[in-house]
Image 1 (cartoon, rainbow, N blue to C red):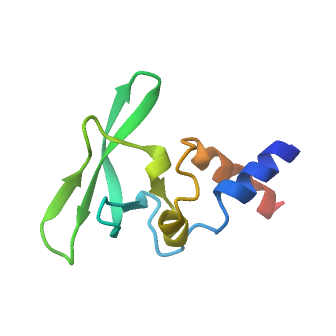
Image 2: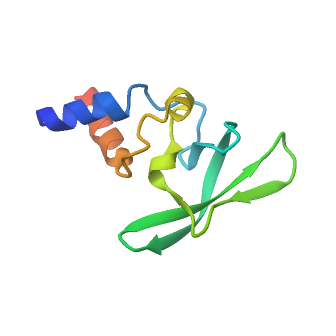
Length: 108
């Protein structure tokens, strides 16, 4: 792992993945500062990035779709609730690649 990658992991992924999340679940904070577990239901291409349509249920109620305009960028989806609250990687879409590197390094 390069020094730059190590610094990016420390900055963008300060906490480990929450174990209660399924592989397909993420955390998303709505504009009202409420954090929900969501799962990706759709993927859109927009210029040079991928955007995602996500679904969530509120208190076991009806399933809602949350996306704005064409979708939610990956930088707004988190695998740790505290990181979501802190917006730890709000400026970086490729955080999942960093998580993969981090997990490989921890198993070696």
